[in-house]
Image (cartoon, rainbow, N blue to C red):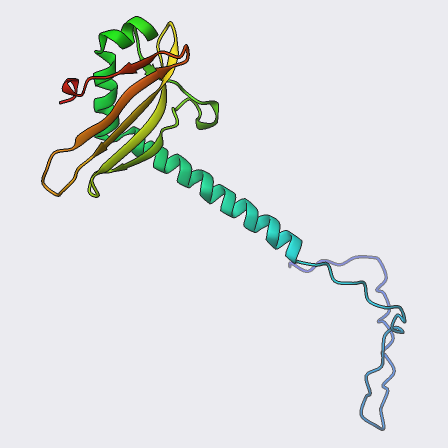
Length: 175
């Protein structure tokens, strides 16, 4: 009922392969003759390792520089300094209104603050650029704490303007 018949003649069965018998165990042979030339010299790995090491150390150094600068920038000492100098009349007269950090291109618009803020060790020594709408200058601030538990003593708090004028910020202005 489901079988179909065709009128085409059947194909003859393929001939059976000849049976081959071996008298000994087979012995592997080379598929091709080996090349007789020398192998190419190995490439040296140390130049690549040296380049990768230099790039890695440079990236680490750049990140360290950025992270420590951001830490100094966000410290309470720097915020207090900026609030003090923005209220100083002599600075506003010389630099102009809107006294702010002077950005640097390699920190993507952030200022670079040189120095260190070591509150627990008792010393703060900072130097950074500021600018107003008239002029710019470099601020220097140094403060120490002689013994634990005492308040900090301000040793240096001045702005040296680009026009050569030196403005001392009175320490009484700092709270």
